[in-house]
Image (tube, rainbow, N blue to C red; front, side, top):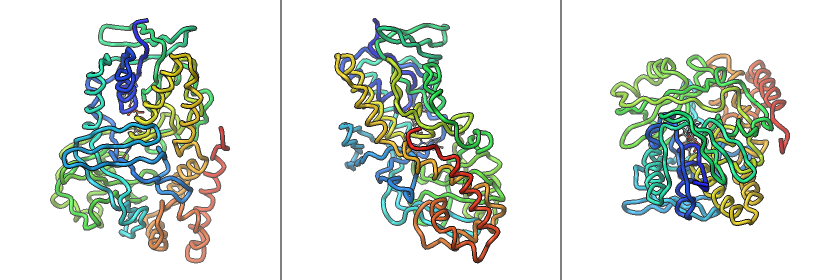
Length: 434
Ligand SMILES: Cc1cc2nc3c(=O)[nH]c(=O)nc-3n(C[C@H](O)[C@H](O)[C@H](O)COP(=O)(O)OP(=O)(O)OC[C@H]3O[C@@H](n4cnc5c(N)ncnc54)[C@H](O)[C@@H]3O)c2cc1C
């Protein structure tokens, strides 16, 4: 066969897979839908998380990768270290620490998810991907941009992938394939792995799964610097928060469901003064999560000769760091299989341990978010609750769930709405192992 490995998708997972396999001497072709794989069209917070943020229900962020990671800061380059898979990646783009994660109510009551401790770093995804792409190309991987992977089919001795490029359709054949085509993966669907997944939460349209983000200069918030900030303002946007993170230089990233929401937020009397001298310098969109709802993770990310990495197998996100870690582990597993050894069981075992989304607590947390969003009837509800809990540290949805009784005396009717929301969300949480 012409190739040992076909990689579908050139995001962090796909580029890392192509780099690792080519450096180890495999003949690799990667197909990517976009013309330039490093161009970011989908918004990403660009946080490199250095804490086990989601190690418990009261953890701080319920998605991604929970193996330990480390970061080595040098004068002109940074090294991201992944001790469990056993590799590191150099990076020389912009970098800024995150010290705080702040949740803000309409009248600016604050709940800290994280306070005065470095829990992550802003890094620039485009620069990170450029590093992976150049290493993959240097190692001899063939990169085919503007080419879509339509579907894969296992054969007795390998796999066929139908691709569509500028010159039409073509079938590529290889001994193995990696699906790294992101959250609504065509490859996962074509090999039948979605049949084993449950659909949870509202469809994308209802949960505000679209997103738009401005990069802004000249924003003056008065909040502690180096913070990730989320605003819950039901009168502007009930389901989807507005968030503000760091961007390169002195810029900030401000995102939410639609531009209308962002405009309203920037004109809100309690926040407008922050934007008096602000200027939008870039705009980027995003769809978040799969179309029909959140899918439970793939438990066994292997089907015949096709191996799944990154968001293609996740409910929402593996994070960039989880995508590269899974790509590395998948390639090592494939190499063993190609050498007649058993590599898949190890990969499956690692995949089930390395991502928090295999834990049912993850779904309590995600669905708790929807429960909350549905329970707020007005801005004053949020102000009341954030004011009540402003001395606690953690995600609002878990703080509220764990202290619901404290809301009852002052706001019995809000208490009932929240309780009902959580009960309904809990019914939707999948049982362990499904
Ligand atoms: C709103 C939001 C904020 C986020 N914030 C962060 C953050 O702060 N930190 C963090 O680490 N992660 C964050 N993430 C998650 C992160 O972006 C993903 O987990 C990560 O990019 C997953 O990498 P991947 O390679 O698996 O998939 P993707 O990054 O989705 O890459 C998939 C690639 O495949 C291509 N593709 C898709 N279909 C096909 C096809 N059929 N054929 C060919 N090519 C195809 C796409 O063009 C894309 O290049 C965020 C995600 C969202 C939605």
